[in-house]
Length: 232
View 1 (cartoon, rainbow, N blue to C red):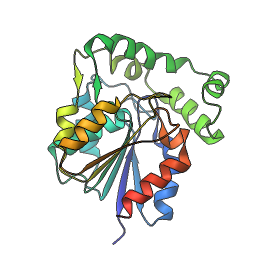
View 2 (view 1 turned 30 degrees about the vertical axis):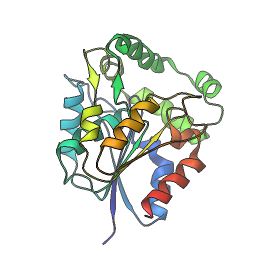
View 3 (view 1 turned 120 degrees about the vertical axis):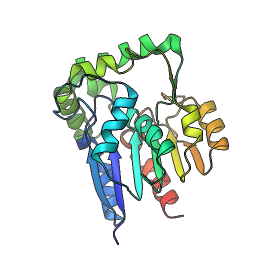
């Protein structure tokens, strides 16, 4: 039977941003699916952009999979679901998931995310000169199709963001690929190492040279780490 994989994008992104990872997996014999988060991919505005609302929406729209891959907010959502529903994913890959934001940093994080709505092709290319043209195009299309409220409210309308305890409860084999702190990451390496040591079957690796989007920033290294882990 063909193994199935679900890919969950991050804030102000969309399923189209998974083009490269879908190609990797499908070339290796996987059947892939994607899902658009609340308010993303042309979906209408949602009344609630809490993490619980995102997770409930994804769980309702999806089945059970041999593999789930989540990036950024998609990694946060995947953490919440996997920690409470063992049947949802047999294996899990989290790309720079947002597990913890100090309470005092939430307003700044919300403001940083909202600024993504102002990105243009010129400013995105200047910020990400190493990105493939298709990554640039998919990101700009995602921004055009997202409900601005989703981007502005996800981190603004929350008093506490800490998924480290949930991550420790994930019972399934999990690979966490974090961004390089010398570049940029939303997952503190200390949290990645400590949580992975406590979780049942979790491996945390920093992708050298990657920022918050390892699959876009350093695709070859990310691909190598992913395939190596899946082949075990």
